[in-house]
Amino acid sequence: ISSVQCVLYLHCNVYILSALVAAVAILPLLLKVYFPHFWSDCFNLVNVVWVVIKFAKRRIMSVLPSRQSKQQNRAGFKKARWSERRGHGCPVLFMGNEPAFVFCWLALAKLGCTAALLNTNIRAKSLLHCFNCCGAKVVITTPELGDAVSNVLPSLKELSVTVFVLTKQWNTPGMKTLVDKIEEAPDEPIPLSARSKATFHSPALYIYTSGTTGLPKPAVFNQGRLVSAMMLLSSNGVKQEDVVYINLPLYHATAFILGFIGCIDTGSSIILSRKFSASQFWNDCRKHNVTVIQYIGEVLRYLWDQVTDNHVYHRVRLAVGSGVRAEVWKEFLNRFGNIKIQEFYEITEGNVCFINYAGKTGAIGREIFILKKLLYYAFIQYDTIKDEPVRDSNGFCIEARRGETGLLVCKITKFTPFTGYARNSHQTEKKKLYNVFQKGDVYFNTGDLLKVDKDNFIYFQDCVGDTFRWKGENVSTTEVSDILTMLDFIAEANVYGVEIKGHEGRIGMAAVILKEKQQFDGTQMFNHVASYLPAYSRPRFLRIQDSLDITGTFKQMKAKLVQEGFNSAVIQDPLYFLDENKKSYVPMTQEINNLIMSGNIKL
Ligand SMILES: *[C@@H]1O[C@H](CO)[C@@H](O)[C@H](O)[C@H]1NC(C)=O
Ligand SMILES: *[C@@H]1O[C@H](CO)[C@@H](O)[C@H](O)[C@H]1NC(C)=O
Image (cartoon, rainbow, N blue to C red; front, side):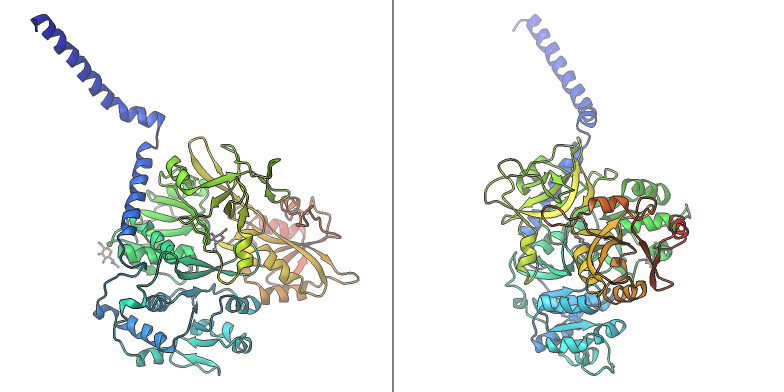
């Protein structure tokens, strides 16, 4: 090689080298500008793979560890041995937040027993219905809920349900005490074989949910779902040293699965609060060095609304939950400092889940192309007036365009199964949508309207159809209207939720028509509603119509009613308000309206 060539060659290399160095230096910049979420997307994919590997390594399909130490578990074995000796099927836990809730569940899980968790607000007819529908023969409850159970005791006896109260002494005949029996039980370990036969698809837990229609139904969680949900906290970097604060009811999926089950994986401590209290919240966090909190939208809003102190000292670094609105999210961080908010979207009985791992304010998740291909979910156009998906001339659904609101549906496959409701194939069927994009395909209908923006972030818009959310609970409109029409003066009732300034979700309202020649009786109505419905699902407003609007498919029209709300300037019908002090439905007045708007009437 001549020296000239050599020099040229070197020059060339230097050029290439500096170009490379420049590229490497600029690359992050380019990524930041053109693909701002590149790294968090990669990180999330790695996380998903990690969860799958962890999952595959499990020897036994159960959230419980596959080794056991007799020392720690003595008390647990006693409980389990007691239940074993009785040899009964699916037991129902009807308990508030207390350590015994967790220990009873663990004991049952050791035996490979599938327990059902029941909402403690449920009473009377709904309560009985819950026993009926999961076929439970045993209920375990606590002294504070003893009265609610003893009210329906005669009917429970007819169903041959045995009631146990977690105490040593209880006087109601027909109800048994439990603590003494547990103490007498032996404490030998339960062999692993009791639960080692479980597979991915075996039921692990029932959680009652209103879902979208009818009375509460037990949604089935299979072992696979529980095991994968267990990893949500650990994949968020939660460690053994963390202290997780649970103040939501354990009978809901958020607290039970995300909080409690999640901590089985991480080994973190749990601070369990009886119930949520905005005024106690930060005190509890400080006192127990809480680092991780859970929320539903209401929780963050209440904290922001009611805790006006701007310099709250705390060590919370992570908040995991769902349903926080963008404006509350921002204000919350402004006031309470640098907390990572990990918003996710999941449906108790559903087969799809999103995580907003990129931390985009207001979003519930992010679409990744690869995952979309694996999960087969879609957002389809929805007609909110007719209350059904839009279909093209061939009868197939149409995907919503980017930026357009659509109904989330997810294909039911082996990997994304829909476990449905226990012993209720009718309700299970109602959550399925057929012939969505092809003849014969089946999708799970989430009943939620969402939107994907141009940057692939997913936003929650509304629930459709027969549910609305109020105070963190789902209210099933058909359940409420069934109960209203039990009154002898009501012919028909159309129940819906209306928005109200400064509150998450929607407050209950009903449009009713009276039977011919019958008078409306506000006090009778109040008493009826109060004895059959939990406070959050009682209609707070009522309008009396001459006739109800019905759609072509005989569905009651709600869109217009929802829009009119309880605005007496628009509504000509007689309008009533549920007055908790007077224990009656009273005529709505401008004064009441003002008191509500100014926040002087607590809703
Ligand atoms: C919280 O942390 C402080 C400082 O590290 C420690 O002194 C205190 O004992 C901890 N409190 C609890 C309840 O663990
Ligand atoms: C409300 O219903 C949704 C399904 O639409 C479910 O995912 C969620 O867990 C329910 N919430 C409660 C508090 O039951």
